[in-house]
Image (cartoon, rainbow, N blue to C red; front, side, top):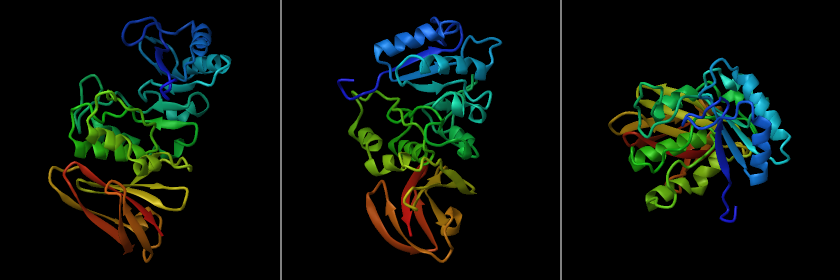
Length: 286
């Protein structure tokens, strides 16, 4: 706390954590009191060693324990999306994982369920109606800076998490990150998209081949729009204003949030050349 950081802990709803250390089952109220005494701000609660337990019931017990602890503690549900927590967790936790574990790669998949950035991104489409202030879909922590992708890919990863109004948790070692990584994680204009007061999760509004367009409505009436190139070569990606809920004839100003540059007024649509595995992130304002 003295360094301006929050204090988060990890535990598990079962008898053992995923690292085979003691879990919280049967000790939820004792654990919550101890967490409060330690000044914990955030609890991630995993789902290993749970055998026949019911997800909603188990997480509700820890929710009740945290509420009685006397300290506000953010409750992160991590049962990997297996019971569709977005349908029941709004009144149980503050955020819930929607998928298996993220991997530091563009599109890899692991036999045990881990997956790369674009696979997790695809699984968020359609979940936007379940998210809002105080109850968020969690596509997992950021891999930005961990070395498995390049800076272009990390900008795409970070941009789309911001469009999704995802909880932004740096998964890299912030003590030793390169300047280009710090620049990604601390771009105020991009972070502002994630933190917009409306709390609306963005959605995919267009897909053509390897090109995606994702858009997020902002509290000022503007739109944040990510032009994503999933392909292995540069590509022209376009968005029509009608794709993002504006009249087709509208003239709107466009700002590039990574370049931090105003791109002028555009009537009806906007297009950009997007690098391979890259993104152009813009703010559109009528």
